[in-house]
Length: 61
Image (cartoon, rainbow, N blue to C red):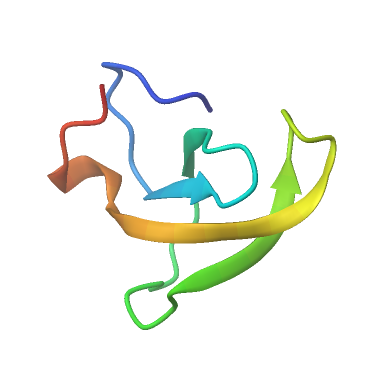
């Protein structure tokens, strides 16, 4: 799911390689995780992503 003004629920994450922000829709708690390793659609490969916080509590424009 791309970041936008939708009713996003999940975690706002940012690719450390290209800077793309998007919402990772998972129900488990990522507050203790600083980085996660996940596939980036822009980079076309697995990269590290910074966990920015809960998407529903943030302005995700």
